[in-house]
Image (cartoon, rainbow, N blue to C red; front, side, top):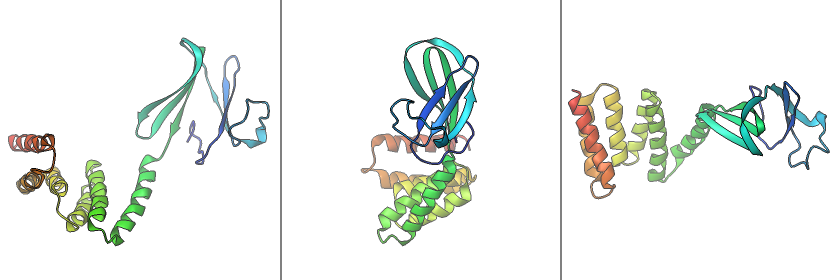
Length: 203
């Protein structure tokens, strides 16, 4: 969405109609136009109003995109001592879930156990980090079923710790270190050791 209005995926021309107090921002369906000489209002996708604000002097016209969070960015246009800005938002969660659904369907029938396990692991980690532990646990089980790795053991440990099952988590953490020794960087092993120390100190 641009300024709260839905915008289909695509490429557009951007026009601005400046006035003394309010400016009109236009997204037009015909991209790569040469200036505004051939702008046709009937091809406008949307128009919205913005209030210009005073700003530090900007010698040349500048566009900036300020990412505020996972789903929101503020697009700004600044020139001379004026600036306008408007939000652009996206349903990042919905987009990613749709992508993940497709990839998981492929993984279910993928004869390459290692590749399929990697897909299930990514899904597991994503859901565990997002607090959706039951979903994460199911995907983690599918990943581990296609081959035990130090990553699946580590995240099984993390999952069980989040579930309040520290006694069950520690053996998986130890197993992760065992599998990672001689394979993973020393920083990773140090991270596992630090995690174990943190968990055992909090008991």
